[in-house]
Amino acid sequence: MILTTEELGSMADVTATSLDETLAADAFGKFAVLSAADTEFIQAGNDWRPDDSTQAFLNAHDSDPWILQYREGSQQFQASDRVTLEQVRHAFMSYLAGTPAWRVRFSWRGIASFDG
Image (cartoon, rainbow, N blue to C red; front, side):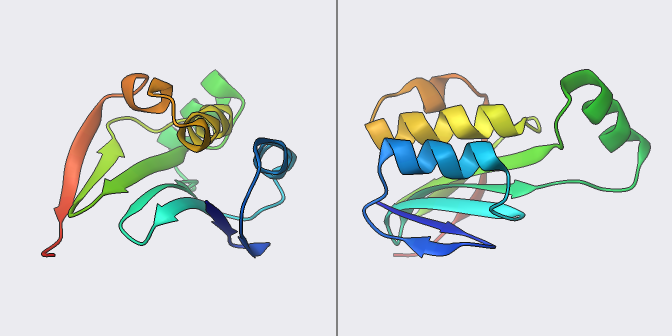
């Protein structure tokens, strides 16, 4: 799999160790994408805004809010709620390992459909 981030660019053949270190360091920028293929990936983007809901999220979770999405083939989905960076890290690690934990831990809603 390939990990692509805002600040670090693309890393091919990412390992669990390198993925965990990259996401734990919080120096990768405002987005990260872990790709199995062009149409199969999990991605996260920082959703910080200068508003009360972001401040409430920070106070409750000690983390910026993140948007978590995945794509499988022609369908793209987004976690129904904003997530923490720690939740992003766990979801990416599960996706890399091929376990279903990343999918069952969140409620998902469809956000896009692409013609094939």
